[in-house]
Amino acid sequence: MNYWKHKSAEVSSEAKIGSGTKIWHHSQIQSGAEVGQNCVIGHNCLVCSQAKLGQGVKLESNIDIWGLITLEDDVFVGPSAVFTNDKNPRAAYPKNGDWIPTLIRKGATIGANATIICGITIDQYAFIGAGAVVTKNIPEYAVV
Image 1 (cartoon, one colour):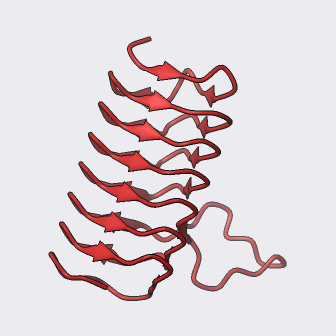
Image 2 (image 1 turned 135 degrees about the vertical axis):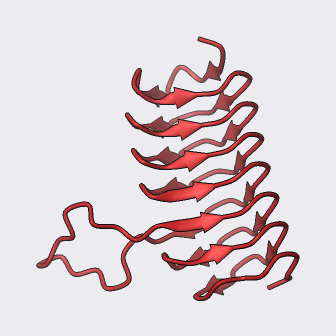
């Protein structure tokens, strides 16, 4: 094992975890997830199957990265930010894994408690402020 995990973290043996990564208290990395080198996964985070994190990604606490969400290299996600994966969720009509992909490009920053609606791209080095609700594509270097 070339990464560190807290004893309370659950990491599937079928997840790909890069060297130098740190996984903190009560976090879970599912089978099929990909986490790059030198990432920090804060406490109480979930990285689902089919999620991809590049190198140097930092997730603060209480963040769920659902399947088909990609965070490229050096993305920062502030505490309790929310990603969605379904534009019209209904309990009576489950999607059975038919989720909508979301792409966060290299170097982007997402502030605390921001909500990112699925199906969009936040381009490289964009800065999303705390509490923002992002419903459309964001161009590179934009401040939202």
